[in-house]
Length: 439
Image (cartoon, rainbow, N blue to C red; front, side):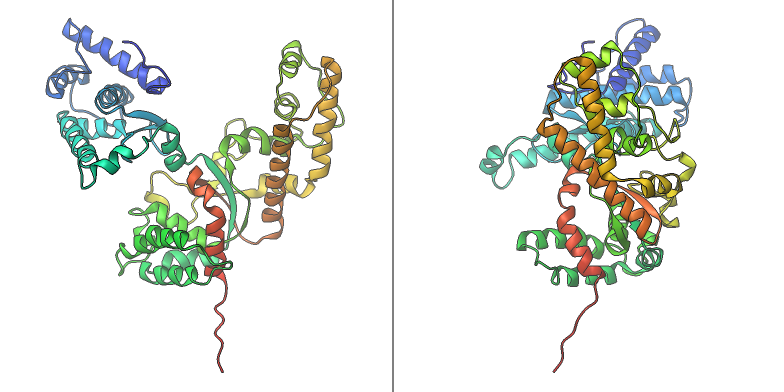
């Protein structure tokens, strides 16, 4: 079985391997190859039953691996028929989700395979494929097919920007406001948000205001008006998290990619400002000569002055230091807003000095340049990276050391991160007092 090219259909490696292992296992049990890409799912099921050795059990690792192999086969069929593609998605159990170029349709092949196997009816994948075919047909041959033909095709980058929560932001949430928000009824919150949209300073553009009304106000109005937001957190976790952020966040940082936080920003905090640097090996010197950014070399080469968990969130927070923002999220499977213990980083932030950190990176750059025999030339990208890192750490220091409330970590998609500035205007209006002038 040949793996599709990364450009055409970026199949996650573990999915590809699971599909290959399933194909081999089915061939062994049947004594002949089973065509996972063309055989009717009912026929595939007859062979799969022999591998299961009994009822499907979702908690058994070998059954999960089998489901992952079927997910790869189902995704390959969607790719062949509709040019579907995988895109990274940290919310998905398999770390990636399937997208379609002609319409925004998100599909978890693994979830679909698990559901079909749990119900003992693999043919449900045929039904799902028919539903997708019907939805895409409505786009192609709907009310305005000419307009549909003129629409640009969506790709993995578009889906990742919209749906992969690859950006992070640290926020401090006021406990009393958090409690009040989650105990409130959704219709009351909807009125508050709608009112705040009319009081932002500067005023929101009409388009942005309509978008907020459609995405937040109308979503709140669709919830059960007789139950609190907390009671419906499992039903609408993203909306509940967003409302908590909008009403209760009283401080925080800007948004940045998770990799930037984990590989650059937080390591700078734990490295500190060493007086001396370790010896450099030939590989590190060659990397510098080939154009590697000195800041990336600095965090890779210089040891941490302060201990951090070897295995933990962002390489900084132990898993025992992570909690819920509100008990209502206990039943939510994938959280994008969590509470963390700031005790480990607070002393480091109190000592943090952006100028001293910038200076030590500069000294390291000169040190590497001298050892490599190559002049140190600061590129625009290197300057931008260090400035962004210092800004984020300065924001984090201010949030942790001067703002009252627990520190929380918020995950966002790139699209959400891009709209955070507009959201902050709504948040300020929502949290601000209402001034009523009378005569």
